[in-house]
Image (cartoon, rainbow, N blue to C red; front, side, top):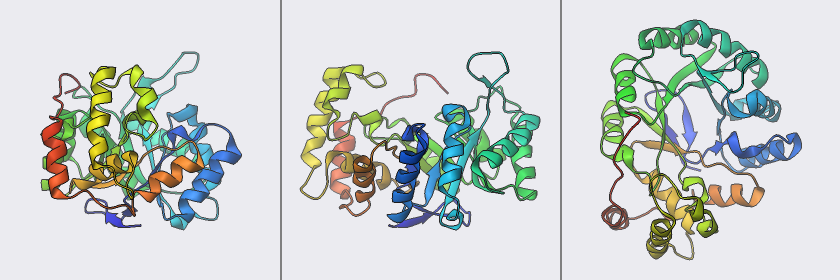
Length: 302
């Protein structure tokens, strides 16, 4: 599998990683999927302390025992569970980040995290304090690099300006092209990599995704999504399925170092990984897709 450098870091990530959120909570099947991914050349595993209240990190931690050197391990921080309360609260404070990293390290059964990501962010956050926390964790050797997982252009711009982030995780697909106008050009210019999540849009762009359009996606109606699927089918070949075409589209932008599609079955996992060997989209195909599907606009989440 092709590997790309993550920003200006020393991390080289396979262009197709594994988003671990959809692995589920059954330990043995999840571990088997992770092992299969690693055996097939995947090295980027993305999890978060938020997923299944830490259970996802625990499963990932069990799966990488004895294979830690094969893995670029990414997790996230910022969502805090308060005792006696339902759900999570947002806490990007230095004190919490420096506390939470130890909980993640324990669950992951490792003594360092390759990429520690802020799991969100707003302009109201104490951004300098947040950056200070990550920089100190780097100096302490608990993390190698840090990034931010965000779709907010104004927040991303602040971290680009003030910090040494290696990457931005951003939702990016044929049907969610909001990042193309502002975010991707900025990150490409600054040498900061994008890790693209949601390349098949929650299954809407999967080969069997016609049944998923009824739920809608972003501002699209089911009819619009069906029309998009029909249009995208023109770029499907014997060597490249619809899902693989969607993955290749996300990888086509020079700012994108990796995509992290999720997988809940071996068949799904292998199909995603095979996109690495499928034919990249030509410049003409990329241009045609962009002309056919105008880029979304940020209407909120600035």
